[in-house]
Length: 315
Image 1 (spheres, rainbow, N blue to C red):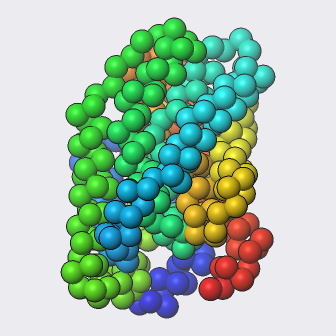
Image 2: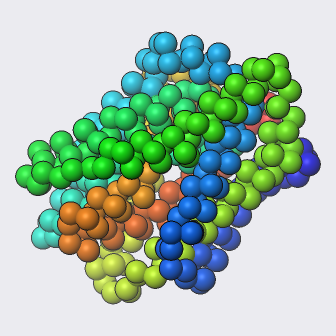
């Protein structure tokens, strides 16, 4: 099973594309049951990932969170400025679409960044701390950005966001890491074998569900095609900014990959809730489309990094 896990990981890009295409051609209604399934799949992914990580390492990063704080500075200052400027350049007469890009740039770091960090052999404790810190800070930062730029005061449901964090990442991650320490690393073979295969399967299930939820709201016209192209540009720039940010502090490969994926990936579900609850429908379009681009660009980033640093990927 360990060989199967490695085989799947090496072909992650093709499986991601397949899951996206399947989601686009098999539209499903986002029922409560499917959303609960998404939470369950996320929970298992983070649990399986944490089974190969020490809780003591996580605590060390938490006690000296220089890198996570650096990542969050880039995420919540550089990326929003870039997204807002691009919105002005390409959509000068569509304020709500520009706000959509701003929201997509200021929502919390995506939970799947932890999964991708594990897939590419990045620094998992750094990613875990970054995601946790950002989810706590997001209910303050996101309304502040909208208020400053758009002059619209909004409220975010703290309770719902914290519960999602607990169920999808905090509790399963802490449980997995504690099991790793209690067994003195005995859970790692499972995480790299059958547990890893099941985690990859859950990962593809999440991508499929995200794609199928978005596909039902797509209406093809000239404006939509333009938003599609610009959204792909904004999403790609997020990963590029992450790479430049990592190079700026001369970090090692594992930390570099954490910086890249924490900078490039967002919790799109949060953005969609904010957009659909407080703004006109067109605001949600670039956010929904970002969901389609995040995973393929994450896979492309992994391939490009392996090509640029083949000795690291071989190790």
